[in-house]
Length: 253
Image (cartoon, rainbow, N blue to C red; front, top):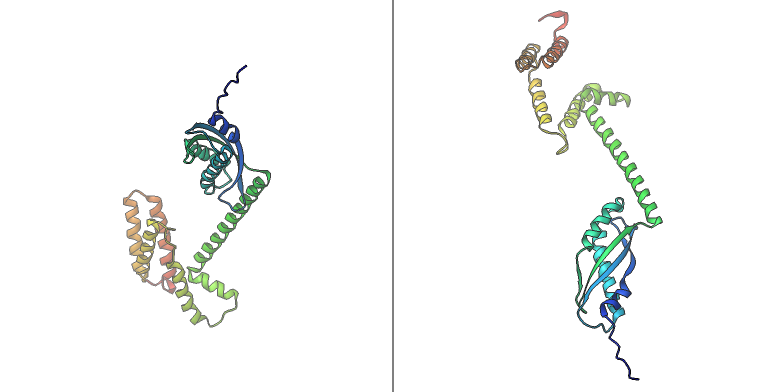
């Protein structure tokens, strides 16, 4: 009875058996928080018989880990579904190992281990608290700046601290208020604010009551011509209040 020559093992099937599925824990954009990735590999072709199938399998696993890590280290762990889609898209193309020449594809499944999931939830809570604290701090700063943009607000602050020498302090309060009123962070206010500032400076350039009444009258008339009677009424009401306060004692004109 003669010996039947056996066919050599198929290098593709041999390699497929070694790398069909493996896992890796790869860092996310947050230090200390990592993704758990399961790779499912499909060997598409092997150019020549493999001298070292185990070494080739290790090379393929290392290459896939590196490719996935390059993507994942830029992604936050809070939106796992988006991370899954992005990594799956990147890994869906055909990959090639140069030496030995092997072509393969890979599917991935991304998840978070229990500890990493807990870290993500703690991070989100901390970020929300930080966002609230920052918003409150900014609002407080803006409110204080608005208060101090009025000399009366500055003087009220000083009264609360028992500051004396009021004639000197009144001049300082006006200068300080002008400083606060003139500062506006870039990009925080639009064209409308610049226009309001220009109008405010224009109105302030008329110190006499008669002049103020004339300017307010012109402004109100312009609003009525533009068919904005409600706004015109407000201007006329403000004009009456301001010019009344500035009128000389005894009602003299």
